[in-house]
Image (cartoon, rainbow, N blue to C red):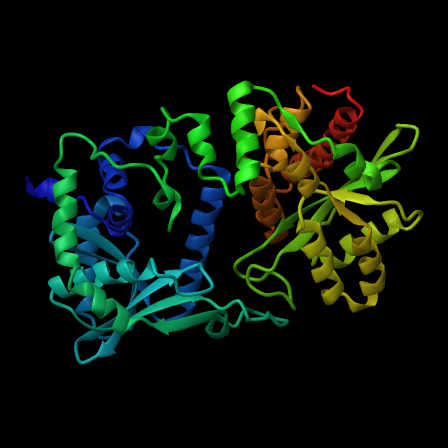
Length: 477
């Protein structure tokens, strides 16, 4: 194996190889068959980058090795110069290579007497088992490069931190966990695993590995679609959580192509009869709190959409999107209370999400708690209704609204929405608006896109409800 091919492993490839050797091989030799990063994956990446940069504030005077990843040799040279300067207390993105593994260390803290502390930054709110091998392979490389590294820490977000007025208290936002003992216990096996992974990368074709639950744990694999393209829809259902009777219904629907409808659907729909409201929220959950009184990853509603179906079949729509740059909770809560105060009819939702949001709002806004509790008490969840009484082959094992609505209401969908077409994209745009990262000229179009998307979600509830009522009366399918 050539020296060039030896320098193929990185932190991410090493952890991928631990999860599955096939994933490791495909990542190097067939990246073209990987699924394109979706909005959710991109949001996770951006959040991780934001948290990583923020953690630099814990080490005043630290210096960033800002050479890009494709200039690794230059980054290593810069790192060596910083290591030799005793006045540099910390190095960010320090670059090293050893035994065919090249890494960029999030934070390298100078401890004195030629010793350094390895600090890995994660956007998570707790230590996870997968963090240990990540740190271990870095310590393996650092020791191989001649550094004395007596300590290894995970720096992660402390979800108990509550932002106060004024700037972020970075020392309280982050928690530093000493991982030295666990890392050292893992270190002995790293060299063998590195050699095994280089052996995998030298193969002429991808190793055969049976797809399974490990493809999603601890991280979702970007090659899942490629590796399961020849598997039947019935096989894919085996990974969905369900009891035996429910799974049998799903399999029968797939084999026959005929939907299953419970004979009790009509009875169950009794409490869902119009007049009814349909409610959906869009939210943000920033890792670094934006507003006083909020915590990391606290879910904050920023907009809502309401449709109302009258007894005579007429439909009306109302909506709200909070202005950018201010805590949206106050205006959103009051606008929702005002919109719903004129009647006490049920409010249909999909999942317990709206229950949780309204409960949290009531806790944050005690002066509006009674009115919000009244709204919360009117919510009726359609998700368990569908799960218990209907199965359509088009669901493909999923009971998300995005799967159920197009299957039960052919022709309905989200394909015509461009700037914002799913909840993750909506959250990302809302966050940009709240942070003031959107150009003034761009903001009106994005706000229209957000309103269109949220309105489409409550329209989906209307369509699903209508389809269920048709099924109960014998008019559907």
